[in-house]
Structures are given as C-alpha cells and as structure tokens.
Amino acid sequence: MTREKLQSLSLVLIGVIAFGLPLLVRSPTYLHILVLLFLYAYLTTSWNLVGGFAGVLPLGHSTFVGIGAYTSTVLALQYGVSPWIGMIIGGGLAVIVGVLIGLPTFKMRGAYFALATIAFAEGIRVMVENIEYLGPFKLNGPRGLQIPPLNTGLANFMFAEKEPYYYIILVMLIAVLALTYFISRSKLGYYLSAGGEEPEAAMALGVNVARCKLIAMAMSSFLTALAGTFWAQFTLFIHPKSVMSLDISFEIAFIALIGGRGSIAGPVLGAIILRPVSDLCRIYFGDKLPGLHLIIFGVLLIVVMIFQPRGLQEPLTKLYNRFLDRFAAQPDRIR
Image (cartoon, rainbow, N blue to C red; front, side, top):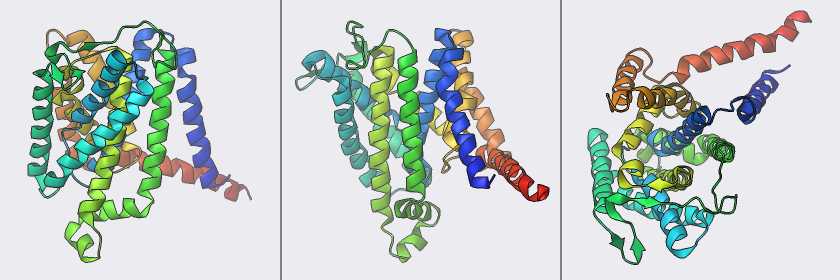
C-alpha cells in the first residue's frame, strides 16, 4: 500500500471514530465536553487563518463570537428570523468589524498589534454590556438574552439532546479544516506565509501583504461568528461576559500556540489536550479556584515554547510520518 493510501485510510479511520463516538459515549456530561472540544478546535482553526498563516497574534476574536451569538439571537427572538439565516448575517457583520479592526492594526507589529486587538475587544464588550438597546435591537445589557427552548428541531437549530449539536459542530470542524487545507496550498496561503515570516521581502517581490492579511481576517471573522451562533443555540443563554470575554480569546491563542499555529493539525491537537483540562478545572475547582485552567495553560505554554517552539504538532507529525513510511515500505521488503 502506498504512503498516500495509508494517509487517506488513517484520515478515514479518524473520521469513523469521530462520527461513532456518540454511540459509545452516552453520558450527556461527556458529550457536552466533546462538543466544547470540537467547538474550540473549530474556533482555533478559524483563528489560525490569520493568527497562524498571517504571522500575527490577534487576541480579540471573542468579539466575533459575540457578534455571531448576539446577531442570530436578537433576530430570532425579536423578529422570528431562523438562526441559520441569523448565522450568515452575523458572519457578514463580523467581516465588516474584522476589516475595520484590521485596517489600522495590521500596520502595527508584535505586542502592539496584540494589545490593539485586546483594546478593541474589551471596548466592544463593555459597550454591549452597558447598552440596553442598539437602535431597534434589544441587547438587554449585562442581563443577557435567554433563548426559550420551545420549538426543537433542525429548522430552529435547537435540540433536546446533545447528539445533534455534536454532529453539527463536527461537520463545521471538518469543513473549516478542509478550507484551511486548500488555503494553505493556494496562492493566498503562500502569500500569507511569506508575509508573516518576511513581510519586507514579500513586499519587495510584489506581494500585497496588507491586502492578504485583510482577506485572512475577513474569512477568520466570518467563520468565528458562525461558531458564536452555534454557542448561543447550544447554551440557550448569552451575556457579554460569556461570549465576548477575553478568556475566550486567550484560550484560543493558548490552544493554537501549544498545538502549533500555522499548521492544520495544531489547533485540533491543542484542543484535544487543553479543553479537557479547562472543563475539569471548571467542574472541580470552578468555585474555589476560578481561572486555574488559564494558569495551567500558561505553564504548558512556557514548557512547550522552551522545548517545542513550533508546537506539539511538530514531534507528533514526525512520529506519524515515520509510521507511514515504515508501513508503506513493508511491501517493498516482501518483494
């Protein structure tokens, strides 16, 4: 069997396991943890388009989660718009906000860019937290919005069980991973990588680095906002600190950096490692030691940056490639 066939077979096997997990995991608690794991893998993969390939460090993506969550929820509660339609509208609004944030901030470098995105994110969160009405739309300030679980079903993006949410976010994750794969092998992906590593050299070769980063920011904002709608429909209650908190932005960045930013597998590996830690800390130490998971993430980040600065995906990818090469070479030995 060739190396390519072995690689395809391994991916199919992973897919079969992922789609079959709800048949084995019947506990709603563990399914809830798995849904959040896939959700953060999706969020981090979306972030990775700009935070990984473009070589910058945005720390305000919780803004786009909040825009997606609030847009679909407000439209559904006040105007009867399907959350599926509200999801797309929220994604469009997130693109506008993302581009407006990116236009001035992409001119900054290093820590200045990260601090600027934090300032924008916190400013928008505080504004939403202190506004009851935004024009004709009722945001309800710090009290948030409750989604009544009345009409369950796919059309209303609302279910009584965890399994439908599991499969929806799994499909969303597979779709964004596929998109990331094609972008990484496209002209845009090469331009982003070049602009992220050596922007001056890329511009000297005629690459419009700022334009490429804005395109990546627009795509990342749109995809992140879709996750915001999913979050709202999954929890059925949103408020500024739950969907626009900087904790979300930091956790996404931690997952990407520890897993391996700029790679396809890194965000998924990071989520598999860190999300269970986050959920278990909240379950067992949430009242006594709030924020413990972020401290653990910080320690892990220090260790990984010292010993594996390109993230955990690098040694795991090398190990995976070794296995592929070994098994792919066996038929040649037999002959």
